[in-house]
Length: 524
Ligand code: XMP
Image 1: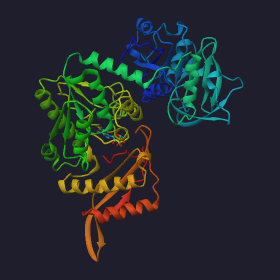
Image 2: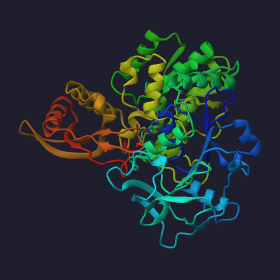
Image 3: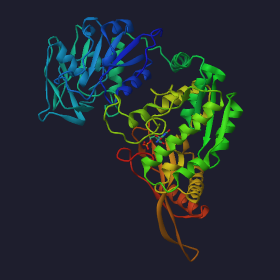
């Protein structure tokens, strides 16, 4: 997934990926600690490749396999003889024990999924500095198999009711192995464990977002050469950051295409085109394709069908403009890591697709442009940091995310122009309320969804029969999980009154109090 940057000047940490859904969170925790890391799938790492990468330390990720299965994933055979500090997580722990002479057994009632509490052993461990000050520590488990006998040289430093070897280490060799996932938020002291590990391994912690920017620019140049690139601009933070980054890398080999799908919010097209024309000298095509998109969506109400139609039309439009700029071979997109993980399984295998995010899974196979996705390993807040590094205006970097399929996925059921117009007006009032109350920056994302339901109301002594809408506002760190925002009742009441008074066509307002999971942020 992450390609090697063998000329990078930083101490390098290698993450060997066994296919866990949260491997990128390990990378993220390390970037937060200013450590440069590379993720390589286990099958790509040969003993010679390992020596060439020359890491200062290695982390073995979790993964869905069982070491007890034939042909299950393994580490390169020279890894444990290189004298490097190694941290094994979940499957990584099991593979370590299995390779080094311990025993792993199948679940048989000891599988653990979710929250667990680890208690300390008698001896302390530097890896656990800062842990256990207030008693047992909460961790997040997700394992079927478990270690039943430690490899020679290992001792136990923490146990949980179902994982007697929750935290283990071989201190003479600097090998550490844990059964839980320290990279997820539900292991509150997990970041501390990584911090201790990189300190033990002697990392200087001198890697920055500025360095990430330089490396990303070098990668874009290497991928694109002297080819032409078009970049789909949606007005969101991601595509804007991708565009400015790529422009820094290859200058006017880049042309941006802003596609007005007819599914934009009120005033959005002018705002985005204006912001790019006023601030950047990047060639920009403003393509009004609203007839095309709304025509194709006419009568469609299935969420995945809508997403696929939109994804296909985006490609048609991009291909048209690729020709118009003299044959662009590359299409750039602001795809982020959460888009990737929720749209396709890591290994391309049969894991569950939650939604076909238009900039990943919704793309038709026939597309004959190569994708340039420089943000594919980043989370939203990291993209914002990169945007600041690139000098994007603060107001722009702080914008709430807006999805590629736009208002289509906020209009469950059939999409009609009158419904979109009502939705735009209601959304504008809602966002105005949020700004007036100074809440915009506290909220990850807020929007209105217009529901495919009409309800009866009474206004000015007359009967109304209009649409109901739902307000959505969530807090989140990365869009992978979210909580609804706890507005005051006064705020909600005032906003509902304003929407009903100011927006013809809506006579009922509800507030969506679903977290993610089990809900998703968007309604479709
Ligand atoms: P969900 O609804 O999946 O959304 O919880 C998580 C975040 O992703 C955004 N989102 C998209 N962004 N193309 C995008 O560029 C898409 O197809 C898409 N679908 C959802 C959503 O707005 C939220 O920020």
